[in-house]
Length: 176
Image (cartoon, rainbow, N blue to C red; front, side):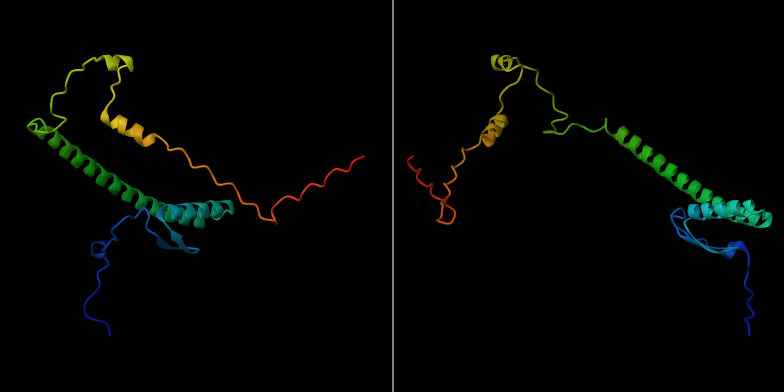
């Protein structure tokens, strides 16, 4: 026996899957069996089936496949519009946050020890700087030079020849 509750077939009671529809895999039950894939793959498959049906002069099947392709095209278009709207909303929020940060920056007082906010010294020309093309030797640079200097390599020890590895002795030349 069935329960007395009747099931409503209205669209308002159906739950729609949430998430990324663009990459979601669907199983479509078409007139020639199941077609499985992302919406774009299903659209391509039904479009190909519609072309094949049209070439074989089956107008009814071609129209049916075109309607299936159109359904997934609308589904994909709606999902893309939702993605674009979400992206625009995030960009708008990011711009507002950045504008708020920019408004707060001039109000901030320079902190002691903040090198970005401290006044920079004027350039002083020294004789050393003029000799080196405007460059001055710094303690960090001299440390790097010390690190870069190579120590001389130790000479490799001469290989020890064994009786097996020694070249055969040369025979004395016979007098003529």
